[in-house]
Amino acid sequence: MPLPELDPEQRRAALEKAAEARRIRADIKDRLKLRAIPLGRVFELADDQDAVAKMKVADVLGAMPAYGPVKARRLMERLDIAPNRRLRGLGPRQRARLLDEFEGSS
Image (cartoon, rainbow, N blue to C red; front, top):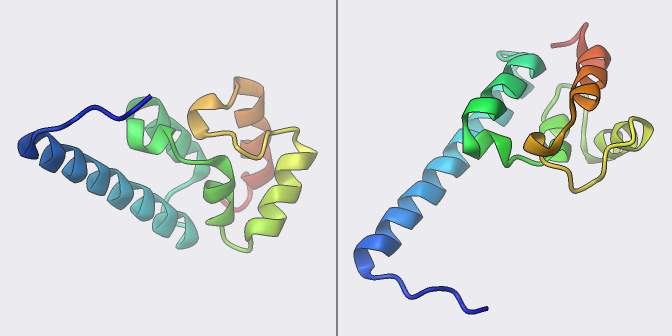
């Protein structure tokens, strides 16, 4: 299915919206690395903000202190979370298990 044709104003608005979403996601990851925001707060933001809800769980975990892509992948496998799962797609039990995992470090 081809993408719809956008007039220049619609294209500009879409580009601005996408850039803002990237800024929000980058800010969340930076704040996680600096321990300036707990993981539970990120889940709360995901409930309210579409840009945060669309973040991949692997990217969020990879931004946690002492975690990288491999450690994040292993944790997701252990907790039975699909590798392509986004924050919005996490169930309450998966969220709770992740919070338990990071309780001391978030």
